[in-house]
Image 1 (cartoon, helix red, strand yellow):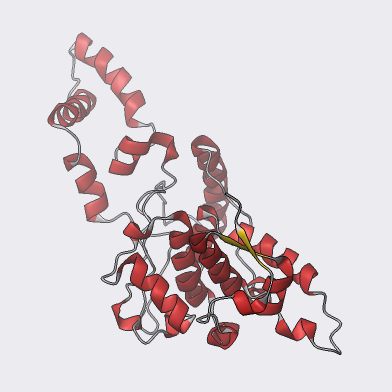
Image 2 (cartoon, one colour):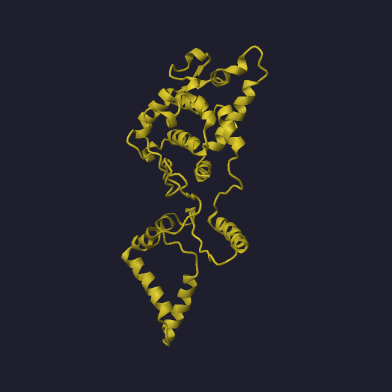
Length: 295
C-alpha cells in the first residue's frame, strides 16, 4: 500500500508550529544533545531505554506540544542522565552540573566499583582460574612444574585487561578501554605515548573514531537548517504512514525562502538538512556529541 503524499501545507498537523523551535538558535552542545537524543531514541524505537517516568508516548506528546523538550513545561519530569554502558544502552545526559565542577566524559579514573565488581561479576569457576593464575605468578618458587605454569600465566598477566562485564559480554565490540598512566612522566611524553596507545587500541577494537568534535559553526547551523522541525515532521509522517513532498517540507520549515524577495533555494537547503540529519541520527554521532557536552 502506497503512502499518501502530503501536497499542501494545510495537510500538516495542527500541532506543528515553527515558532516553538526558535530558542534552539541559542542551544549549546548539551541542549542539542537532549533534543537530538530524544528524537534518535524515538526514531529507532528504543524508547524503553529512556530513563524517566513519562515514557515514550508522553515524550512525543510533549514534543508536539512544546517543540523543545529542554523548554517543556514538563521538563522536571524528564530525566537527563546519560549512561552509555554498552552500545545498546541509551539514556539521556546529566543536567544541572554544579558550577565549576570538572566533568570529563571521555577520560576518567578507574573507580573502585569498576575494578572490584569486574571480579565479582565472574562466575565461581572463572574466579578460581584468576586466583590460580595469580598464585602461580607470585608463588612459583623452585617447583619446576609450577614455574612452567607461571611462565604461561605471566603472558596472560601482561595482556590488556578485559575482565569487565562489557568485555565479557561483548568482547572487542566493547568500545571502552582503560589505560595505565605514569603521572611522573612529562606532559609531552604522556601525550605522545597516549596517542600511540589510543591508535593501537582503536585498531584492536575496530572502534569508530573521528578526528574532531562538532564545531561551533556546525552546531549553530543545526537551527539554521531546521533539523528538529524536519525530524519531528518526518517522525509524524512515519507514524501516520504518509509522505511529505519536498515542496511542502520546504514551505513548513523554511517559510522565509518562499517570500517574494528571497534569493534562498529551499530545496537546496533541504538537501543540506538531510545530509546533516543522516550524520546526526547515528549512534556514533550521539556518542561524539555527548562527549563534548561539558566543554
